[in-house]
Length: 573
Image (cartoon, rainbow, N blue to C red; front, side, top):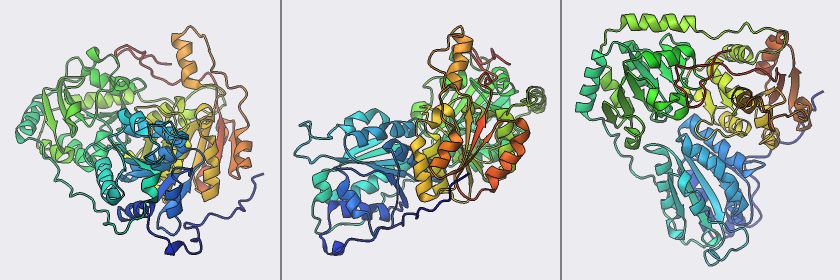
């Protein structure tokens, strides 16, 4: 039986200590004020020695601080906030282990181009470089995985620097920015300070007209064109323009893992996800196409398979606001660098004659549609996810961990928009789901946010059930338990002669009991006949709830492109 939730919810602002307002303003107070002025609402963090002065300035501010139970969770929650809102998610941690615990979350945001500002405490400047207590060079450690980083050395420039950092994180190709704050800067007395003012936003760089015209010409001459859509479309705020282009031209579309939802997944023109676990209709359309219109995608190896055999007969029109991506892995016949929304609007003048191609791709979509008639009486995860997302409707947001369930979510769930599907793409971070679910639900309280996780992934940040309990975050969690590291086991079965090495999770706890120990409602599902009632219970619950769903440990994700092979060489069940 679930324990009642009796703990008092922490107030948004802790009472100010007696005499607090009479204290002189410090660098920490200026930093907190700057965050307020820059529109920050929520900060995810964990206090400690070097960042304590900043925590001293938080009480009485307008900021809502979410105390996570591990600094990695702070960064992953901030990552989800950035995905949902398009604004920089903010996380904070102390120096040393606090800062290093943020690194995975920072790298996660960097790989998927997510706006984030990470603030770390640092030892005083006089001690820096002496191997002081809890001193690490977080500036140097994170340099390969940030868009920009700075050590705050001048207390008079705190507000100015923060404004610049938020601008960098959110503009152009978004990404994480690190701000390292030495303790002496945080405690320095500030006589006067200027407000934080964001730099003037530059006008969006319009795509070159000649390139757009060349793109229209090549599209009009194509007989089998295909839209190849990546996460850059959503990051650039060009979803509506992409949808208008698809509607005007009638060109079929495939998407990457990060591009799902740019076209609604039920749209006739959406053929599915391409790549290693992509659908057969999508992968075969790519291989047959004579033109790829690549929008905000980067020819990632998980999407292309063996690159030299990817879309072998296709010319390429590549649109991206980051010029570094064009011609990086595949030469473009036409490269269009600049504002994606304006480029899509320009290309919408194209009118290719592709009725036969569209008819063919629709036939292939029907022929190779996913099947849900798996034998047996156990829960079939793909069907469970399909029915869950359909029942939740357009408010559904899946925040997914990494593993077999991640691919099942991408293949079988219904997504109305890119923000309906949050997952760790480039880095593949296990443990993403629960803390990111917290960040997503706080960013969009009215959305039906469901964390989909596995028994392997959930244990990496299981402690964040305490955060859910503390703030009564009404997150829904679907935990697929096959008592194994499923995707690793599948690869060992197929490519390592069934040498199952260190994948057996036979000693898992009872996850429903574990959730109840944290004060969260939970229940277990073992039979397919119980799927409907389980989904009803999940969606009708007003508070946090966990469904522990036991599935067959030998169930695999299909189809699958073997590593190093062409996308045309798909293995099927």
